[in-house]
Length: 266
Image (tube, rainbow, N blue to C red; front, side):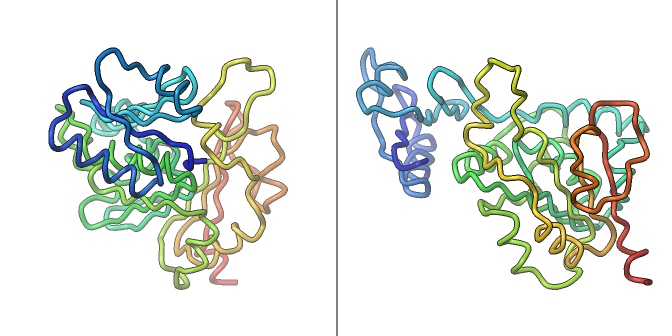
């Protein structure tokens, strides 16, 4: 998908912008096209017959047709503020994350859950986020490094998230037994609502294969504490993948958890 990627910069790029553009083109197999005069993103797309333009400016923006994607910590900001006031975060409660834990987020997306995990795991913990789309992984990785906030805890958590551009099954197969405390899957955003007419560029970039029994088997092998799946209640995925019935039925989606301590004692 990245073979026809164009990388451009602001009209007067700083040395840092130029450096990031070169690295993006190299890592993603894109072509750098400087922005001059009255050059617009639409003109670049038309001239080079591409849907994808990555623009490096004060913020990094990916243009997919006429849609834009840029990194933003999103709901992690609200969730961290609530956590700091003493509120419980459902994902953290369900996954049983403690300071010092290692967490594998197999469906990183735009990184909101990984940021919350990183805050909970703390400086002694580790959070690895897997994203199969190299382009989305690059965008999120750079965003996590560069986003500035007046909320110190948010910035610190973002900087601790490790981003790996790979499919999660291949990554898990390379890991030793019980090498992570928590393994987490949230494939929800990859499933398009058929009634929606809005084009979602994140879904366009993402791989929408359903979770496999093999992936869940690998997750069970490498997890010490919990394997967590977030899904729609009505989707049938919990039953298909061998997860216990979820506790909550009060919303359209919920979490189901496999507790590995229980499995290890049987």
